[in-house]
View (cartoon, rainbow, N blue to C red):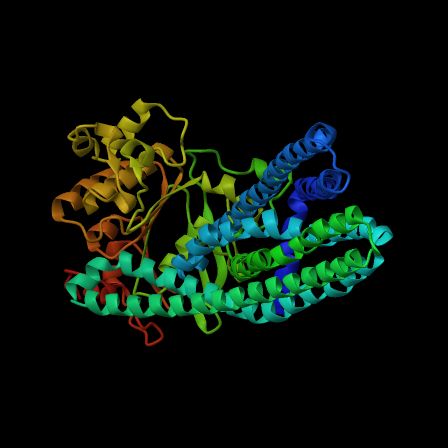
Length: 598
């Protein structure tokens, strides 16, 4: 399917969401068109009566009162039509934004991590707003472009077939030249949207990396680059506007010439007495109104081109493949759902011959097998790229394995509804994300219906209560995006408080003590020991003090399990086969701050 066909089909599909409001808007616009014809007749009758029939103001006041009534009704209809069109576009925007947002959530952080967030933000904000004029202005206008002129022709043909013929012949020329010029504008507009998306992505990346740019003295270079990108975008915008203004000029010119032809023909016939003034003036009043919807098409056609450019970006988002477990078919088997472990009851987890690759040629797990018993504390270690994070992402439901199966209490994980499964686990990443809001809001994330006492208790268990209560507003202290205003250790302890509050039976820790000072590390280690009691714990580790007390240490290399055992067992083991590129002793030697015990 071609890009144009795909885009048009996408826009038409969204139209069905709110076709009722659009039909109301079109119907009100058509009724206003009929009143326009009546308005022209009342005005022509009043002027004809004053000039040719020498009528007084009292004699033509009925026509004037009817004119006033038509003016008021048309104003009300125009307002109502605008409101209906607005409701139509608002409903489409709301549902489409929700659809895009849900798709991004379903795609998951692993899939989205490969794309620029700036482009997606631009599409979700400016792109969605660009559709408003398409549905609120363009679609109703396109229907009225046909209906209103046809209604006028129905009244004009019996009165003056010559003028009606001129209108009928010249009218198609306007949309023909509009479309002819618009084809070029459409291509330019698509390029402009792509440039805007790239510029948005670059701006966001630069803002997020501003500290790095300052440290390496490259901020001026980036500023110059942004100036060039902005100037390039300015040029592309002016190219689109230049063609848009040209199309408007062509429309105005053709409409003006057509109206002039009708006026000249009516003038000559009036001069030679071949036509009555009332009918001639009535037709002449309707001529500009006949071409007005066609002249306005230039403005509305530009809205269409903007919508097409934005729709392409939305289609790209909706066609982003969903790799996470959330799209698996939820089981309706009551017996299977009943086996789901209740909260605070650890589960037996087994990986059986799991293989996974993010993309062709990038194998993350290769025939990976591992059994994790309920209540065990497991440490995964290995070099970067060994597959440790992939194991965690599989359990978190961010990705799905290509081969093999994962069982929980002897039930395949794919049978578990993803939302229900995620209630069974808590995750503390290496770099937790705190949202803009209060500290209390960030702790209760995902558990909104909890008492303040529970939040405070979770903070105490995470060794976070002391620094939180030192703030003037305590738990109501506002923090910035990504925990702005807090230290790394404080952010980590708030993330641990989240895990304490959730109290899930499965705990996944992605080196929660990395990149912290000694004091913060000790406090967090204490909290982790408290949090781990009675739970199944999986730790992605890079330090000896994190793993030495683990019930089982799993050494990974290139997506495979190399060694399994306790710290003492692995120290005295003699796994030095050539098949293994890495073993526990070698791994300890490359841990930060560690010396090889071998």
